[in-house]
Length: 153
Image 1 (cartoon, rainbow, N blue to C red):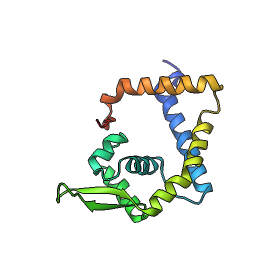
Image 2: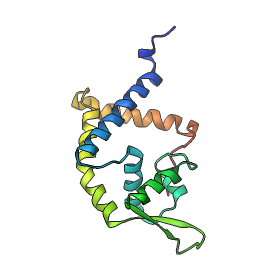
Image 3: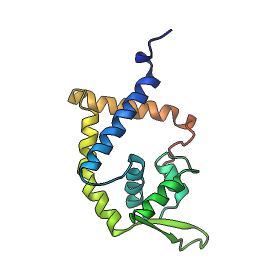
């Protein structure tokens, strides 16, 4: 049997655990209670104000059935609002509140520092190569995910 410490899936799980812990620590230092998924949602909504929940789920590769809970928590924290769509009165679109924009911008440097900490075990040249290979490997299995990334046109 292969040693689990050489299995990509096992290593990815361990790396994910560490990356989430690093993210939470940096965000908590600034007095915020925000998850990496919530941060990703805020960042995508800022980049594309007025998107709906289904589109948001695709843009952050998150399950469509559970994105509602993420959005609910962000609404409760008053970081975003749901508004009636101007083009479809039955649909709701997402927009950041002033607090959401401020929070996102305050957290930006800390989140960037967290990313650097996550890569700190690698030499500078290895860091870019690791991210490139991680993007390539992730793209290669994207459609096998229960929540594949869906880029907008």
